[in-house]
Length: 117
Image (cartoon, rainbow, N blue to C red):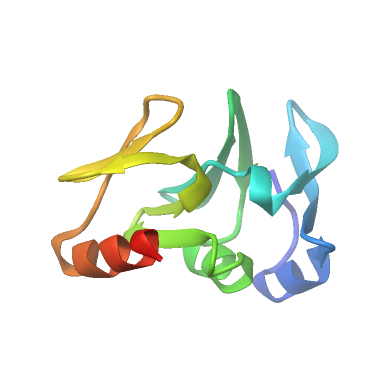
């Protein structure tokens, strides 16, 4: 789990690396470009990269503020998706790993427009 405050998130980004994450209790760094998607789960956020799941104590809103908006889509109140991981978009988003991510009705047009660009 991450043990820092929301305002410290910006200081963790250096050349697109997110630092101070833990995976299996081991500190690590990840590139935001390798993130498949983020999922809000109550009081923490799961960061999915391939088969690996990282956890953060920061809100999804905090992550949205620091991720590259040209690469990530805010498709639902509980999800942010990397556009490079998308296979198709219809009633939901199908990712390369087979995961289906819901799209809120309110955000569907914005998601489609961002993906077409």
